[in-house]
Image 1 (tube, rainbow, N blue to C red):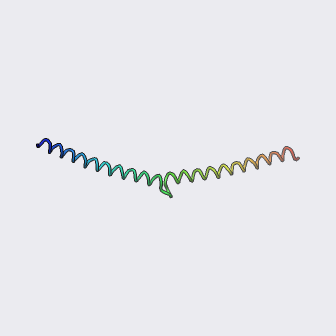
Image 2: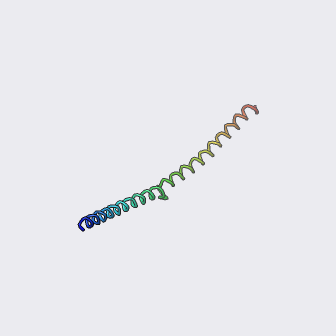
Length: 79
């Protein structure tokens, strides 16, 4: 009988430990979600801003190439 009580007490203790671990995991997941999904400083917003910057920079670089080709063409073909 005492062996069964000891086993139940150990199982209860284990369940309490599991519950504490579950709460810890939930808080970690919540923190990760905040870091990823925060609209101001989250990782996803930083990636979106970086993508937007690269698209604008790419357009600017193409504009510079077009101007350079135009200048070279004028120098070569229109004396």
